[in-house]
Length: 421
Ligand SMILES: *Cc1c(COP(=O)(O)O)cnc(C)c1O
Image 1 (cartoon, rainbow, N blue to C red):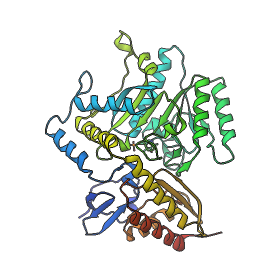
Image 2 (cartoon, rainbow, N blue to C red):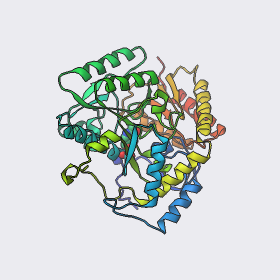
Image 3 (cartoon, protein in one colour):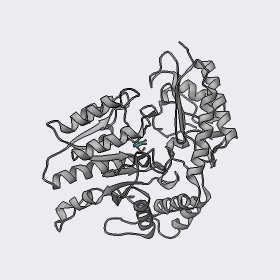
Image 4 (cartoon, helix red, strand yellow):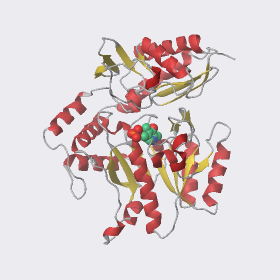
């Protein structure tokens, strides 16, 4: 029977196989046809501990029978209070206020609105946003506006607002990036905020840059009074080896966005963390000054209960140790590709490893990516390359054997699809 489902980032006209998944368990996905896949990309970067983590599943079940949904304007509930208090304790001291929403894109939109609200209330008409080249911040109009322009958003260009783009601090070009930020910060059109994915740019191609550059960028923004917004939607919850990526730079952002791993990957929930100054800018005895944003499921109690259970896991179990072990297995896997002529630019941070496949036409729309997807599917792997960039971002329960299987398949893909120069 024909499916009525319209899938995201899927060209239905190509008739590609759309596997039906019945059950998830740890790093594995069990398909309806009996096959099993290793989830090498954490089901779009969200599953941290593993699928159907028992403590999180139990918390969801319990909360679903207690309080399922609550209007969050003017009301509160225990799971949200618990998560908010824990987030304040777990994140840099600059962040004291937690605003809930339901996706990474929304968390970013909220951050932009908070920044503009802050400057408005201070009587400065600042609205220019600075971003980093190759960034990705989500697929809503505001989030697309501050992300890299490309095939994903070209047709919506008339709706997108202008931003100032700072070059990516690639090896050898770090100082140029810092100089560009310095000059944008001091230019005539004073920026309101600088939005950045700390240490690792995800959808832009798994690009890594040093913590020292991040620290210096934060310092430039602080010197010139520009709000520093860290988008940790993907990097948060241990992906780069520390709970937050900003910890490695020792910086104190004004606003920080988290989502994906907030519930361990079980339910949609996001949060925008703000400094006291941002909160206070919206504080007055005039209702007109309040922060105007909400969505129906803001701080949904079941999602918050999942997040609270996830936070307990972080507090009671050695999650960072697990990430270090997975990271070491990924690093060893990358080493096995070292002599392979089809691969270029191996890189690794925390529980993420990436390598570029040398291939003729390697753009996002080339036929390479779907061919690679189909190849990996045949090997029992859910792997979804970004153009010619093959990356592994598994749940933290991935075993040594599973990692070895993944990299053996990647080596084989290099033999089959690579075009060494
Ligand atoms: C995935 C992602 C987003 C968007 O999150 P959604 O939950 O998909 O809306 C924003 N920023 C970064 C850095 C991301 O990786």
